[in-house]
Length: 299
Length: 200
Ligand code: SF4
Ligand code: SF4
Ligand code: SF4
Image (tube, rainbow over all chains, first blue to last red; front, side):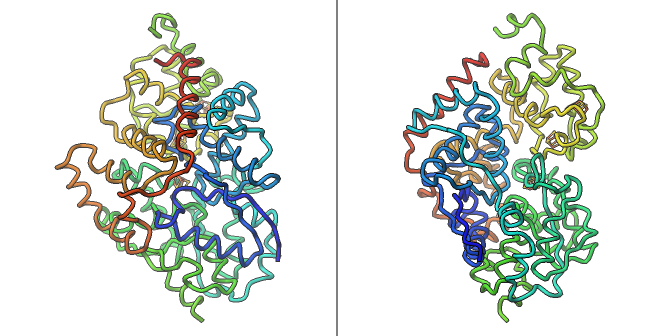
């Protein structure tokens, strides 16, 4: 179909047997079906995520992303660097903005990069996979390739924070971004448009360090999905996915709820709608199995 | 040392030593950030209040507050602030200065997790999720660690079954190849930053 080539920054959580490994599995399948070639950035490192500031400060944190961008420029010249993780994308894009904006910051970063034999020039763009889908391919073209429409499945599109703020996807609003709903509809599924916790923060790293405070966020996100009749939640963010899926048992204990709702990635929806198997879509990688998707994949 | 140099002018100190600190003076105290923050109810001092305290020279109070550590980087405040303050980064910058000055509250869980995360990622260049969770569970000693780990056991088991947590990671796990270049790069970055921000 599209025959497009990108430099790819997969990020720590997507590695084999890590917390969002099924995001990577489904991303690879989706890209293969869409004619997208991904060239992994050789020897990429962790982006520092949203919590890296505490130990790393400013320049060391920015240098982490500068190294990835420099490696991408050098080895995958002329290609945009695409991330699937919200935090990876945000860190890379934020670093790029600071580096390109401040000659001082760029000089400092390059002094540090020299120690690793690298140089940041500012040639590569930092983009999210969702941008590739909707800007470079487009909803109509995506829709045209659907083999098995996700008919009758209701999805609550949970966008979260970091693919939405502060940069977001061009043309979308911060308070009510529509791209997930549009992607769901392009795949023949039903988007729960009244879902009102779309951009609520899941608690991020605090789900880990301060569960008493963050589980209330998770509860609100899930409760609203149930209240609006969703069969499952779909998200573009691996940390959102993990927080909202794996803590359901803990939330149930704390609040006496009976939550058991699957939380999937857009890449899984596209893979299934494009005729991929359950394994290709990484549907075996869930704590709460997305049965309705597996059913369609098995048909 | 730093206190002497700034003659009680904490705003000036923040401008020079805190990430994006030069923007604090742009705050017009409208309160939008505090009202937008999902963790607002848990904070002693939401952003607007911290910025006011900075201007009032309340150095100890600001830097020893645990409020900055409650920021999840959700960027809600940033997109709503009418004066375009990079609030999230200022919060992170204040937290980091507090830590380097030894004023961060002892045992603040997110401060500790942040340091563990950084140590974990800088060691091999990539995050080892299993070691990271173990160090979090055992941060308060072995007994508490066993208790914490038991409490989260069902979460861990669920992930393992789903192939998303690898018990073998304890033996090695994911790494980058150029570790020595990576370490030298980070060391240099820290030296440059410490010199610019006068961090000892
Ligand atoms: S909702 Fe949670 S995981 Fe998603 S971007 Fe926000 S903090 Fe990160
Ligand atoms: S929203 Fe902006 S201007 Fe208003 S109080 Fe917060 S930082 Fe200040
Ligand atoms: S980025 Fe931090 S300070 Fe701003 S609203 Fe989110 S949690 Fe609050």
